[in-house]
Image 1 (cartoon, rainbow, N blue to C red):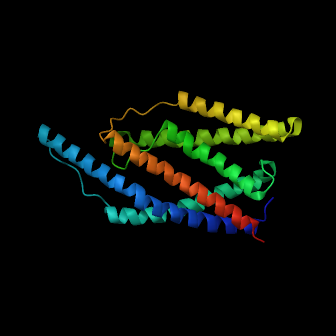
Image 2: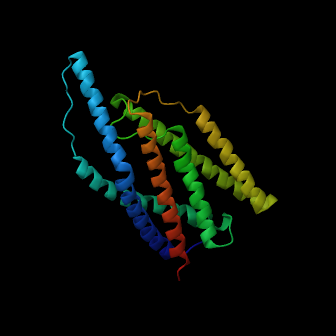
Image 3: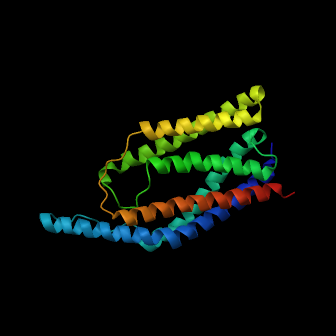
Length: 238
């Protein structure tokens, strides 16, 4: 089991720096798409009010876009530390069973599995929309579906890790890893097939929508690459 002091140091250094890099990435790459989507949605709603003669009951936003962008950095810093703490706990429990001969390889294996379980699978099922896009009345349902997908996907990852642990003693590490990967793929496929889809109308142009989604996914990839590299580097230091 890795030294607890090194783990805490790795969480703070890797989590905060990866969170900062990710926040800056989103400010530069993702936020312009958010601004465009919000403007388009506002214009569509304005045209709907004008065509129906209804009263525009929209309220001013609680926080300005400038404040929201500042909060983005704070949010990604907190996200980095929180995810880092969970990652460190999982690594402490699973390090001896992870594939790879070096600590860097084991960290990369766990980070890749986490990326697949809590980012890629939910993204494939429920790709994100820019803030303000979609029916506000279904927001709670959409959030519940997404969180359920993340939790179920993580549960599949945990079961795959348990399966690998049991198979390793009987069939060796290579077959254990293969069995765990196969189980994870089947579990993920079932989630994608069986979880209900979203039916909200989205007025944002398809090109802009997928630019935002691609930027969101790229931000997650940036976080996990930076976090994994820094986490391993800190652990390897004496």
